[in-house]
Amino acid sequence: MLETLHYQSYGRSDSNAPCLVLIHGLFGSGDNLSMIRRHFEQDYRVISLDLPDHGQSPWSSAFSFEDYAQQVILTLSSLGIEKANIVGHSLGGKVAMYVTYLKPELVQKLVVVDIAPVSYEPRHNNVLDGLTSVDLSKIDSRKAAQASLEEFVEDVGTQAFLLKSLYQDAAQWKWRFNVDLIVREYLSMAHWPLEDVEIFSGDVLFIKGIKSNYITEKHQSRILKQFPNAKAKMVDAGHWLHAEKPSIVNKLITEHLQDQ
Image (tube, rainbow, N blue to C red; front, side, top):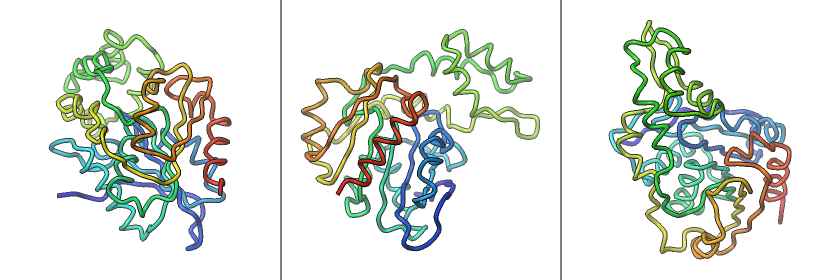
């Protein structure tokens, strides 16, 4: 059964306030897009969601983009939101794109951050191996978890990002994301089931990190087939461009939302 997601609401609460929904990527939580949230909360009602199987949202028994998108739609409906702008990063961008497929009338404008509507070859195997190497029943500290992770994940920034979701509950260490499901369903998460259909004819902005290979030139025709009114902007950053270059990313999102 589909459930509503954990969310945090910021900014304006008046009924006339435009709504901006933020959806994070794989292994993350709503806090990951806080640099975007802080920029917009003065003028927008900002809803930061935790995806299913992430943060404080319910866990699933299986993964599907349709179920994830339906839970986003259900959550927004429970909040009385009939129209929203949506910003999604990475996996969150794919989920946001699927929302526009299921309920296009809900989406005013869409911003997809460094992901394309395509299937990807596996690229997180080291992370998955690192996470499964952490024996939560035996570690006694965050540092012990990091020691297991670093055998597979060399990048210190990635280690720190993953460890943000490690917490202690009644002397037991736990991950906030559903490791077992992510490992089991990873190939489904990397897949994109809608490659041959037009998804959304509304206003869409794709923002690519120049140093990232998640969006490439060969994806352009596929993007335009599925989102015929899509525009693209590039930022001199990697996959986490909203953290590396927040001012530029926020400026691009602002211009897109305000463009008539």
